Length: 185
Image 1 (cartoon, helix red, strand yellow):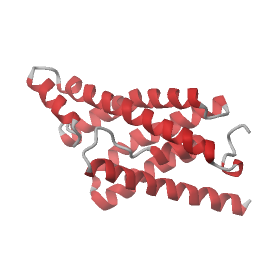
Image 2 (cartoon, one colour; image 1 turned 60 degrees about the horizontal axis):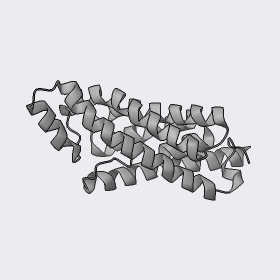
Image 3 (tube, helix red, strand yellow; image 1 turned 90 degrees about the horizontal axis):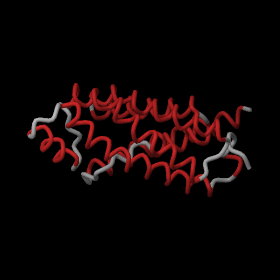
């Protein structure tokens, strides 16, 4: 029992680091997606919604300790992703291609619904990605700040979360069964 708990916690720690490193890479390269939830998707798919939510939330808290407190409110987005993926996988008992696409698309819509008001409050609607060009264009053309911020975030998140989910699908196919306790054989 203790060995299983230790393995689970180590896995979660690795997934937090994965989120942070890939998030840094995505931000540094000004990619149109974030890459900062792959570890959350993986943890939630393998160990369920509780661990997925914890990994998502801790990623933002640890990131805030390094980069400043502005990332803390976005923990709500990461927690939601962990919960969504964990509950979808728990209900389906596997992480096949269909489940991966469902998780990616649902999270791709839910993330900007939660993140847009936070992004407006914290950063004035900007994201630091190429989506900011569309945000500024929409805002300049008279679109409300919510819509101007939401539309590029929706596009970014649909790409990002679907990509994350599909990558996790490929990883899970290669994981030994001992690392897939919540998934059918």
